[in-house]
Amino acid sequence: MAVVFDRTNGLVDRPTHYCPGCTHGIIHRLVGECLEELGVLGDAIGVAPVGCSVLAYDYFNCDMHEAAHGRAPAVATGIKRTLPDKVVFTYQGDGDLASIGAAEIIHAAHRGEKFTTIFVNNAIYGMTGGQMAPTTLIGQKATTAPYGRDVEHSGMPLKVSEMLSTIDGAVFVERVSVHNPANIRKTKKAIKKAFEIQLKGLGFGIVEVLSTCPTNWGILPTDSLKWLETNMIPYFPLGNLRMPKEVE
Amino acid sequence: MSKVLMKGNEAIGEAAIRGGCKYFFGYPITPQNELPEYMAKEMPKRDGVFLQAESEVAAINMVYGSAGAGGRVMTSSSSPGIALKQEGISYIAGAELPCVIVNISRGGPGLGGIQPSQADYFQSTRGGGNGDYRLLVYAPATLQEMVDLVMDSFEVADYYRNPVMIVGDGMIGQMMEPVEFREPKKRELKEKTWVTTGTKGQRKPNIINSLALDPAKLEEHNFKLQKKYNEMEKNEVMYENTNLENAELVVAAYGTTARIVKNVIEELKEEGINVGLIRPITLWPFPTKAFDEIPDSTKALLSVEMSLGQMVDDVKIASNGRWPVHFYGRTGGMIPEPEDIKSKIKEILGGR
Ligand SMILES: Cc1ncc(C[n+]2csc(CCOP(=O)(O)OP(=O)(O)O)c2C)c(N)n1
Ligand code: SF4
Image (cartoon, rainbow over all chains, first blue to last red; front, side):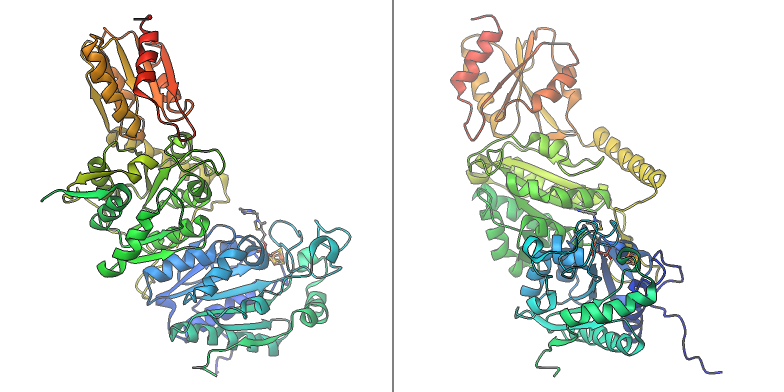
């Protein structure tokens, strides 16, 4: 019988600690599949963040480096400048990348660092128990925004991809989502493209993946997928914001 | 090899390159700017990489990444910048990675000033970052000693898989002295089998990490680190004891302060007053054993610092109640005057 679905060699054979219905696991799998299919697992060095995916180093089947909260782009810069021929990526949540690590991601993009960032936006701080993130939607409740996020008080949710797409060094910027199979396939395509652009040495690439946090959103996994689609996508529109001329 | 006249900060850069430094990540701050500037000029010509980071926080994390990837890597800064680097230093020490960190220190607290100071003694010897960790800290007093220690520091860092910090005040960074570059002292180094350089499909993935959620595992890791620090305390202590014979009083001073004290000692000799000097070269591990050489003739100890009494704590621990310990210090970028040190010594010895 033909095998239509198998585990990827890009991940080690180990159960993850993610909550039921959390889409971090799907995104891990897509990254692993892309590295495997591109034949670069043996050359890959990943940088794990602080956040729910802090243990990502236990899951990817390649060398991994754990970074301090928000500093993954600086760590990745150090690795890539030391080993320019290797495939380097960071995997970061929205608290990690858009809040404490905002300077590091902007300047890595600004220098056109030749690594790839997988940016998992679930509009909340997952690991620490559901506090407000820079990406939390207007009116969305979080433990530190118990009455819902208020623009006057906390500003509008930060559109990281739009912001980074204004930076010349960020040659590939795309926002995708994993709320249904069609979009999961598009997400995989974007991640692969970002790695291909790194392999061509064209500059910095980032894939923002809209993701769920059923636990801290306080809704069922299936409802979470729906919530993502109806609430997040209108504010964080999907699509490519930047593609290098060499690739277009 | 012949001697060359060099400015302190540039001599550090040259020594680092000759010591095998291949990667340098930094961020400008006075009074250490000539060092990154020297690296920016020299590294590309000599098969190395220089990168100006967007902040000290980023610079030390670039060091963290590079060290994990097996690079011989260095960063430098001055006091407020080193304060920002403490987060990364703690992670690097926790993950057991080698690197060299230079602090050409200036007066504080806060933004402070830009004149020489030794008020970062606590910051460098007590951590500053979180957790149970230690750095090997060198405090050279001359440019020649600076150059020798910088050159050797990469081997020492690799040997222990631990950050080495070199502390010089702004005076040593800015002064000019003739220096000679010799060959670095080689150590027997284990192969870096732990580096994140890609598995090539030949081995299991390597993980550079400082996280251990299981407290029993984290305690075990800290015990392992402590063992290493104990080794350093046994094998890496460096100090200079001068003029101890028949000394009525012994001064403890390091770095450029020790140079001023040496002049004071000579002048007091002419007045018939015998004063000795203990000069710690490693601030951590602190040279407690240097105090065992203090003779019976000594009535008191005096710690002289460009701070308001930071090393004096270690001097008290080392003296262990055997002598009364006094203190004299200037701070904020003020340099102790020989005359003032002299009067302090005379005052202690009974108003002579
Ligand atoms: C310096 C520092 N500050 C704060 C924390 C606590 N902390 C851990 S994870 C986290 C939020 C992570 O949120 P996000 O990046 O959105 O990832 P998620 O957990 O949602 O996947 C915070 C604030 C920390 N570990 N280090
Ligand atoms: S807390 Fe949220 S983001 Fe974290 S694992 Fe659970 S569902 Fe996923």
